[in-house]
Image (tube, rainbow, N blue to C red; front, side, top):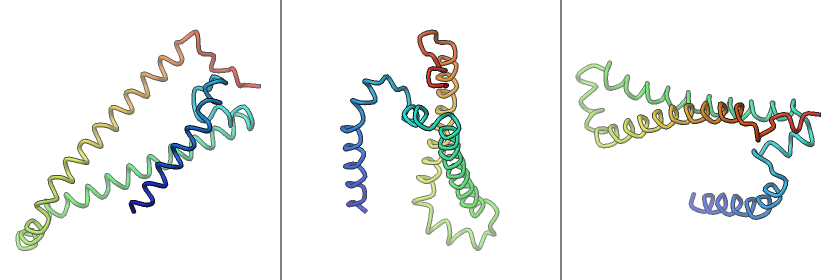
Length: 133
């Protein structure tokens, strides 16, 4: 597990060293801009939708797991609740706090994305149609 994390950090650092200067020199705003130049808007839309769907499905699965976890504590019988509480009480509150922080950060991310899109649309210095052929 540690090896996979180290490899991930290495490959991300290598990608930044190789591609950051070139992307900065060509004034790209997103990682999708080179693909948009080469393959067009349809391909970028498909790539973007794949990423968005992955994020949505992952968030939904995490929230569903949290709901099932809380369901065990709220709706289980008293006799079943005692052993579950004894086994999981040390970890339950940590997990619930982490999920609350995750949901809060997700809401903040949506608000920041809305502000970013608003500024992007209103900006005169950014030409959103510069890659449209």
